[in-house]
Length: 387
Ligand code: UD1
Image 1 (cartoon, protein in one colour):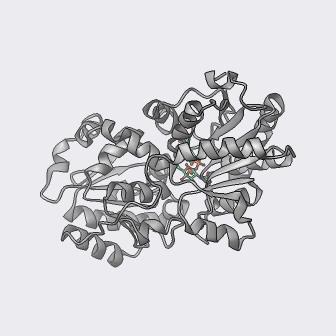
Image 2 (cartoon, rainbow, N blue to C red; image 1 turned 135 degrees about the horizontal axis):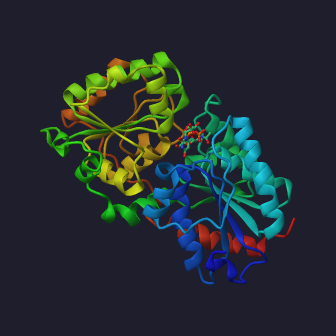
């Protein structure tokens, strides 16, 4: 049991849930803030095991200084229905055993939804961190997870002001919503000084770091959305466009296991020009931070990277038709370019001419979001009637 869980400040521990890679950087500052709170707020860390590889999970725990999970549900990969159901089946006895005062979930992955459903049906209050983001695209599995999680959550912590408008439109009372800021940026600011130099990350995989030293620097690529990488024609198209980008700017491509598997399955390895495009396995948190911090631009379909590049002031081109994080466009360095070759290449050209977006860091992306959440959670739990 985590040391903090022995404190008697609450009726029961707070069950903090993580499942997949993008959850870990959000939960790390929250756990620290719960421990640092006066009085300390007892918690147990539950890892559903949705992500389980060394690269996708353990290494991020180490980088972020996350404690080992108190409970690991070891669900692994499966279809959405099976994965969600398996998390629910294995999480229910955990709730029964520990009588938590509440369950804290972060982000929008299947584990977020599954644990919210279990807690809500058991009458255990749920706090959702990163509430109210909407792409308005129900084809995205994450959008379904966001909508349902927010409907069921009792306390909703938002990262940007327009999230409250999205929640209001869905009938969620303003009194349930708290504008806390962005916990992912708490992690970024706490770790930026310890980021691993990009050259070291390339060398670790036998790649000549000279690739990074061209007159225009280098770009960083990540792609993993099913809409971009699960369809052979789309993945072929995008790799072709990236090949063209790499003629002007060398690229470092951190490959998600889903993307690597599909490149092999569809026989698309021929589209990777190794002299201009360095392929890396999924990177640790400190490696990714080091790669992005010095990059000329980032090309991605990740939600988290849109926010991290805004905080770092690095231009970001998002290869999607929509984003649930509009503040990164309105205030930050992000541009939605979709998947059209001309739009992508034109925007790369603009950035290489020094005309990329500079942006500014949004309100409450200041490294103190988790502290605000711990303060609010304490007040809220003390004043909430048991259901
Ligand atoms: C999940 C999240 C997505 C998030 C992404 C970050 C949902 C619906 N999707 O998508 O929001 O942006 O994580 O990575 O929750 N695999 C491994 N090792 C692992 C985990 C997965 O090799 O540790 C492989 C498996 O072959 C698996 C595939 O990656 O089938 C996809 O994993 P999965 O967790 O189903 O979805 P992600 O695409 O990672």
